[in-house]
Amino acid sequence: MIASVADAASAVLLADALPEAGAGVAAAAGELRRLVADEILVLEIQGWVEAGGPDGEQHYCLADLLRTRLDADPALAAGAARLVVRDGSAIAALETLARLHSTHGRTGAAAWCREAADAIGRARSAVGRSRALSSRPGRPRR
Image 1 (cartoon, one colour):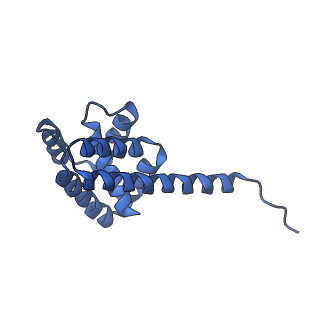
Image 2 (tube, one colour):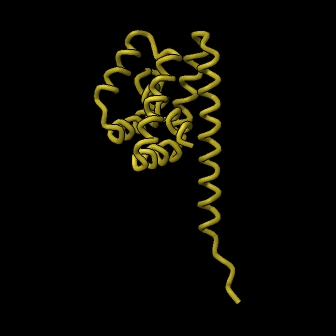
Image 3 (cartoon, helix red, strand yellow):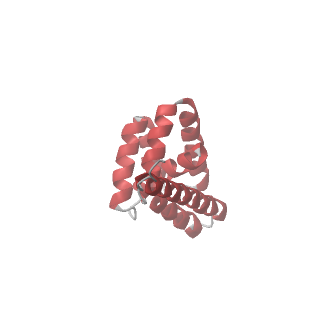
């Protein structure tokens, strides 16, 4: 799951710098930036976007960096997982980047974004089912 969370978190950070990102992505990105607390990383992302990116390689590198940080810090991993599964903003960010990558002929990166969006969607569904089950009244004990 950490790989999917890192993929989604990287997409949220990258998509937020794009003009087509929605308000939900912007809110999630703000929370993620506070969680990650890495201003140099934020400036790096802004530079990529200003230079016409992010390209697929930059996206892969950011996801790999986040994956390493999530592996090393369970509290950060838990916070990032809650954030990317909470609402549809991570999926929207991944879909935004998939369109960007497709437009520029980066089909591998686009497919990777779609796969990550599917994984986050499955995680959101599992969380929803779990919450639904836990909110149902239990059977009386005999």
